[in-house]
Image (cartoon, rainbow, N blue to C red; front, side):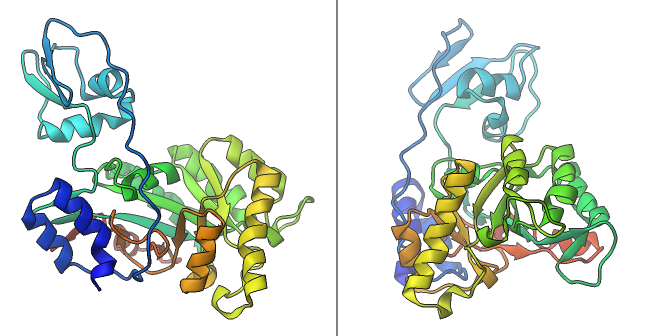
Length: 347
């Protein structure tokens, strides 16, 4: 049991008070106790702009007096190299409104990258879709375009940030905490409606997503059910869609031979690289099923993560090879969708 939390304990001891350690140990998750890959190297600091008369600096912070034209976005662009990181500065200053003459503190290095707090810890939900339709379907995992649009509008209108896979990795690698209300969108199988129905809606809202494909389903010529390699190239070139592996044939990986398992993991990765120029780092288990042998082989093929269909958000200390994903079904009730958006766990 202690192995399950070894990563959390190691980071907490180095960075957080004993209260935070006790909080983590009292929590629980559905992840199996297997080893995780070595953490990625720390994020490189943004290039330092020239100092101005209204600021004072240390290696860790900039303290300055704000001008009327300043915003958290302009500070993030100047000092952190990316205006999208404005939330780091805003939260550090208690989200107070910037006014002329106000003293603002800007942390130059990641603050609380694991999202640990005295009363709990941040989690990032990963949502899992499969099929889409132009109208309501009786199939449980087929979500109508109208429902999908309503769900994306809810995320946009309620202040959620949709993360790329790399931004999610930055969080679970203890490199940088994303905004408190963050979510990852994934779509399994590589079916045609991910391209014809889901993608235009994602593009409308500017939301990134990850599509996990069964490479056996992807053909060179068009058909009505699944995407082609050309469809996937279009999605990749949009800059919004990542393409990752969901095996070759969608077999239950826990019930096949070692040779078949090697083919399911290795051949799917090889084809994605060959056809799209993408080195797949994430793997979605068919039916969400996996075992220690599956994980061992994932690591041999260089995958960084494995995704289940166990509901719930993901904390930074969860095992990289048994990450939670919440299946999204065809319910038209927005309340059902909101239940999948677990961004904080209180303990």
